[in-house]
Length: 67
Image (cartoon, rainbow, N blue to C red; front, side, top):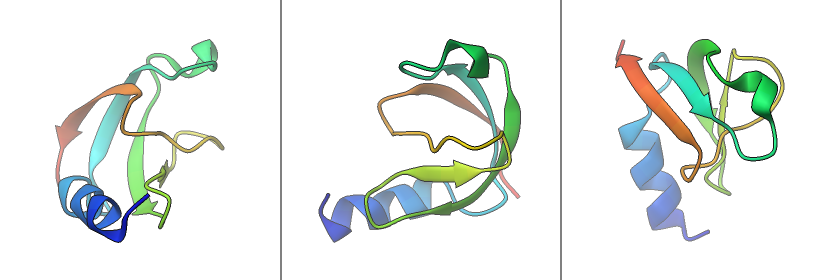
C-alpha cells in the first residue's frame, strides 16, 4: 500500500475513533463488535480493541464517534 493511502486512513480513522464492525471478510464472529482504533499500520490495516484481527478499509464498519 502506498504511504499516501495509509496516511489517508490514519487521518480518517485516528486513534480513539470508536467503530462498530458490520462485516469483516472471513471473520463472521466479529460482526456487531465495537471497539476503539489504536493505530493504522503502513499496510493500511486498522488495529483496535475489538479483539485480535485488523480491519481493512474494504471491510464493512461504521464510525460511532471520534475522540
